[in-house]
Length: 171
Image 1: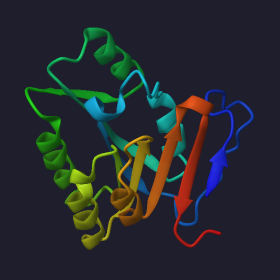
Image 2: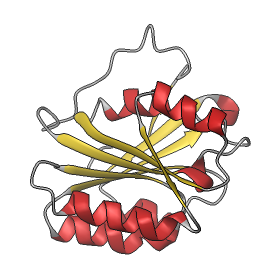
Image 3: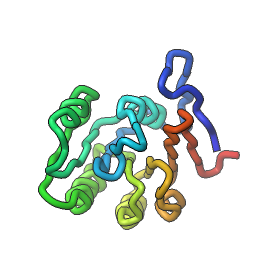
Image 4: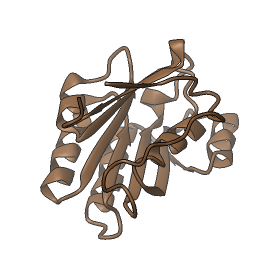
């Protein structure tokens, strides 16, 4: 486990390059209703900076339900992400978007920002197709199965401004 201190102010933070991260293209999908909640106080710009350690984020989409406020949608756009507003449950649409990324030859890393174990088959399918996988979540409720299946798991802990990253093969 590694901790990143002072994640709200990255002025003094020097990102470490991961082995083999150079030139990797990342597709990030954010489960908006699950992750963009007041109790988590998550900052998408911070997530973008964390993803920069893994490669270049080429796709950044935030899935939202029809109840998303105009203010939230505007904030997502201002942070450089593409908001996708769907009627009903966002999980099915997120799975479709993830499958498109899995079969996109220009994407090397599939990153899912969710706590939901329903996306476990997506992680497994991505790995079957030679993609690196990252899950980003927050406690409480971050699926242990999801964390253990992905190549990397990042746990956002906004209550104390820390992030833990568990990396396979790192002591």
